[in-house]
Length: 192
Ligand SMILES: Cc1cc2nc3c(=O)[nH]c(=O)nc-3n(C[C@H](O)[C@H](O)[C@H](O)COP(=O)(O)O)c2cc1C
Image (cartoon, rainbow, N blue to C red; front, top):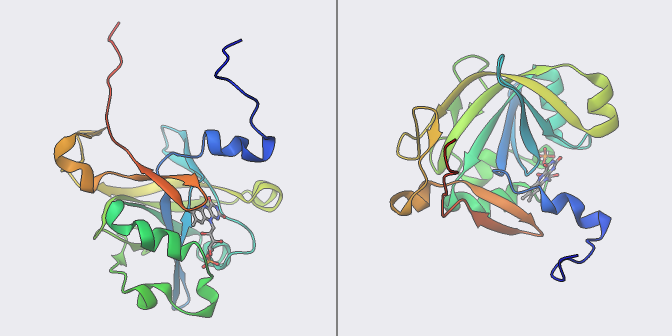
């Protein structure tokens, strides 16, 4: 056994795999809008493009998503690191976080969900695929991506272009406890 390896407490196990891009989940319904941070999202299907995201059932976001049938995932860059943490600390039930933090957003093209571009690398507008069991038992929501856009300085022709020139446009990844790391130091696997 590698002497550098030690057991990880199971309540920390999710942290070993939770540093995909941290997203801002935006939602809107009936004149209300909201934004929360989510570290836990993932693709589940190429075609049609489907994703899953964990949205706790106690959040205001979950209410709006259930009511509207949609949400957007916006990918913050380091410029929005503090904001990402802040909007993940309190509920939008108590007031509009967009107004509170001066967040610039416009309606997405298909569902009208608020999409953020300033300070973000990309966004995905998503239509909920109702799965009451997984939503209720695991707070896991499935959705189909119906529109997406990305900053071409960092994502073009279907690929992330991470290099030294665009570090400020790269995604951020939550390590837990308010600690983040930037996507940085891209490496390419050898080709067969
Ligand atoms: C960095 C970060 C990541 C988070 N990841 C998630 C997540 O994946 N799923 C979730 O349900 N809550 C997550 N949260 C907590 C929510 O963002 C938080 O409960 C938020 O206040 C909910 O807001 P709302 O009630 O306005 O929807 C995270 C918080 C932070 C700061």
